Amino acid sequence: MKVLFFLYDGYVDWEISPLSYMLSISDIAIETVALTEEVTHKGMFKIMPDLNIEDCDPSEYEMLIIPGGEPAPLDKEERLLDLIRKFDEQGKYIAAICGAPTFLAATGILRERKYSTSIEEPEYLHYFDQTFKSESDVTVCENLITAEGNAYIEFSVAVGKELKIFEDREDELETVLFFKNQLRG
View 1 (cartoon, helix red, strand yellow):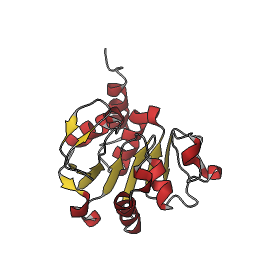
View 2: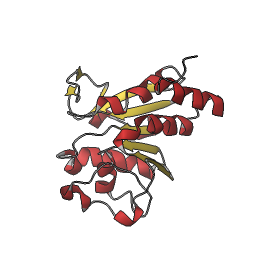
View 3: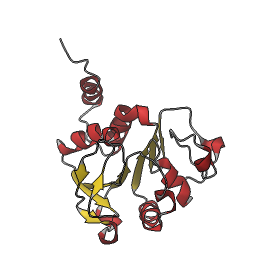
View 4: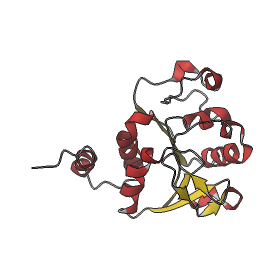
């Protein structure tokens, strides 16, 4: 099984760090894709993605994962929006946190699906139908997993559950306690 992380300049690295760690110790293969040969995340590290977006085939992946960050100018970037549409058309999971659900909304795939997001800026609200905004920090609706940025552990667990990386409920809870530094004993 393989997942794809879309990375871009200014993406919020800590929103996906626990998730990428959880996946790296499971049987899930991880690849990264971007619009450029190099991106710099919010923590200012430079990253060299595995693939350029033109070389990406959604049929090779179980899920597309998009970290949060400033939506502009990517909310109008057709190569990204096209990739998201292709994943959705194939019924593949798409996971987006914080500002990244804006990309899903910009494609039109949210339609009448429940979603979570941290976006409240007026310049992006026209993409969303507020009647479907969830009260939950993390929302799983059909093949979409969306979350507010402060719920990055819960987001990681929701993605992990859909990818079936936990042995059982106890394993899932132990993972949460580990990331919340509550396993001392």
